[in-house]
Length: 443
Image (tube, rainbow, N blue to C red; front, top):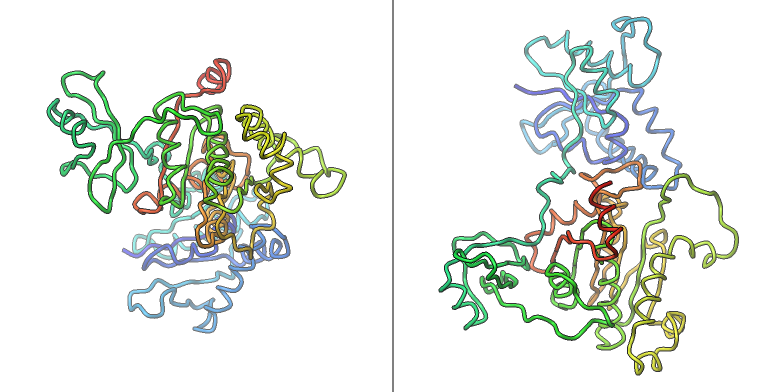
């Protein structure tokens, strides 16, 4: 049975390509939704971009027919669903107490279509507005969220798997430093902890090489990375992928205080200044305030950015303050010298579109505040020899238009889990302080 999906404005503005996500079912866009989308098209934001993109898509499709009569979403397919722009809405079908709003136009259209099709077609409203879904349910209408870009956060890829093996397998791993696990499905660059089936305290860890189909043992690092030493097993794994030049995309998720940003910047400094593997360390983060914004900031661009980039400066001061004497003499007393030498840049993500970034170690902090489209824009800036590191906590989101299930960080983690050039690890143990760890766990 074909279904009829009625799309709300917030769905279209979050993903203008959503009209192609409903297979052979029919898609209805109310005319009031088109008008509401039109009010956003002049905004210089991601929502404005999506509004303009949607207008271009609909304008292109209308050349294939008449939107009021239905246009095939996939013209090349015989079973293609139809796209309609619905012109009329009978508000008398709703109780008089309801106001004349776009949400109620959608409800009126859904009720009209439901009566029209009866049991022959299922009619459903697709919206990210929880209140509209509640009202739809009160009228006996089906309503659901748009799930195409959502990730089940409870089953998010962690980059780590534990495998119980016999003691002889563990001994073989110690002897040869590599092993095959034919009965275990693994992803490229996934970390594997082998546990002795007879003694849980006997463990060893390695990383899976998809090209060779083997798990290679990882040697424990005895030297620090810019004075930073891993304090737990997951941090040791994070340093492995951060320092591996074959891995071009690294994603690190974890709660506050797990060391995501600090380790990423430390690895970037090592690769840029000590090993000369990259021309520059570029560190950036999206600009979203926690709580109510205090308004415009005075000064030039650098002065305006200082409050937003202060967390990055804090990490740099900690790393440079703890650096070795010889390195301090070569690089100067602080990060200003690195900036002056062109080896370090701290920039907002605002102006990244259109740029090309070759041979750079690019760290994007707080990536959970980015949309999937913004993440795509960032990743497609990578030039030859560039490595990109995304860090963030999916549970700490300040962007009002995304949540833990549809933000850019979780989107990339899931999409790149099977790619040989990508690596991921989820950090769970806080190392900032005992108070920070307890606050992250209890509050």
